[in-house]
Each structure stands twice: as C-alpha cells, then as structure tokens.
Image (tube, rainbow, N blue to C red):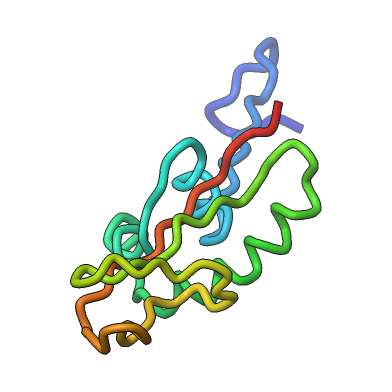
Length: 116
C-alpha cells in the first residue's frame, strides 16, 4: 500500500527526534572542565538557584559512582577575613562567617573533572 506523495522506489525516511537532555544532564555538561557557582548555573539554565542546589546533591552521588569523573568543590570563603569553609557538607552558600560574623561570603563553586 502506497502513501500519497511517496514514490514506490524511494524508502521511507524515519525521523527520530533528538532526546532532550534532563536538567541534571545539562548541569553536568555545564560543569565539565570549569568551576561555576549555583547562581551562575541558575542563570545559564534559566532555573532557580535552589533548584540547582537540589540537583547538585544528586549529581554529587552520580558522579561519585563514575570512576572516570570527580566532583570538585571550591569552598565558600569570607570576603572580610578570608576564612575558608573547608569540610562543609552543604552545597549552599553560608549566611555568615563564624570567625568575624561578616555576611560577605563568596559562594562555593562546583565543577567536574575527568580523572586520568
């Protein structure tokens, strides 16, 4: 049975739409080879900063399972006294410095590096 507009000697061309990436896949792709804050990622992907932070907690676990990649965190630091928030488990920006009580805290930055 022939379809209208199709010549019998030409094969049908099947159109397979490209699978859109999930938000987490987009974040992982954006983090590869660079360091970005949650605010910067939110701007690039046009989503809320809190959404990025929620996705990052899952991305950390996913990347940990992949032996070829490593999730990197450049910790937050106080702008006033230079205190660095090393060992912090939360991925959000601290509200203030525990040392000088300043609220001028630079956000943590995240990245994904390929292990060699």
